[in-house]
Image 1 (cartoon, one colour):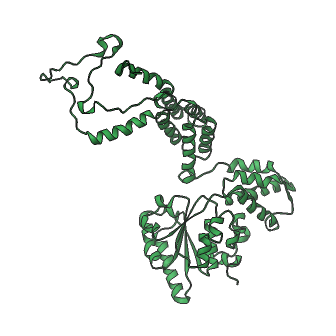
Image 2 (spheres, one colour):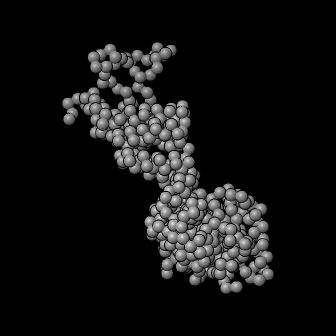
Image 3 (cartoon, helix red, strand yellow):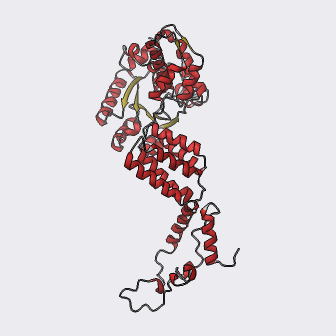
Length: 439
């Protein structure tokens, strides 16, 4: 049996019959490094995967978005190196499974000198103890570990494990790469569909909607073919894709990197005053299954952080969205949530409150225990306090220029109002009170 053949890959997986009934992404899984589309920075002449193939295979963490070839890359490396491929999922495996796989690997090596690639999918889901179990086997070479994760490995994995592994980043596939994958699948349609035709724009539409996920793109193509079959159609059309897309369009891992990327995009669109973009990212979060309370909590924070006193009503609108969400729930609460997002994006912006807090932290570190001036102290049961406190409401304008801070802080300036929105009025008022005659 030639090394790296499709039969070899399936025998490594322990399921020779799987190909006929497996989903399309599995049946058309690349067999050679050259077929791994969209990762040319890894598979090219100076790429990490190419280097691992041509030199010595070593333990690695493959990280990047879903559907970019992490599992396939690990299988190709194992097959091309003549090594056994053992796959575990961190979702339903534990320390006992790790030890069993490692012991089998040691026995195989002692028997015929054949090494083992231990592939751990979703490796970030292993807890610290389970990750630590891997360490001695990786350290002594009992297994070549290839862990796959959609998370940032520096944040999601133990530093001890990361330090023993090569970090390999897989990138989201470009639309051109996905079209190439789909076109290759279409050229082999005799393996999975009858000899019908395909409207030329279908592949481009799938690629545009797949969000850089090659596995999702192939799954969509297969489902679209099923729908066309059910309709008795001889041609796959965009209308068939539209029907499938209703169920597949917006999913994302609500705890993964893509989730946080979309949240970040929404926040930055609000800060950047683009209501259309902010609304789009909000819609992506809701359609992807995010907890709407999480979304509104972020909106509440940024009403104060990015708008602040330039428009104090922003925080009121955000708080109203929170109240509406808890009162009526989805889908009705989608309307006030959208209203809040649009309001914040369209509002004047100021981060003066956040900046003031940053200066405050520095002041508190420098002067953590200054005494309260006598005239500001609580006078209950304190007959020894004789310095008079002047009541601002007793004078016209309700303002008195008296000391409210310790002498050490006379030069302190924490809050510097911006020139945006209502905050400009605040700035002018404070200047008139505390610096009259200063322009």
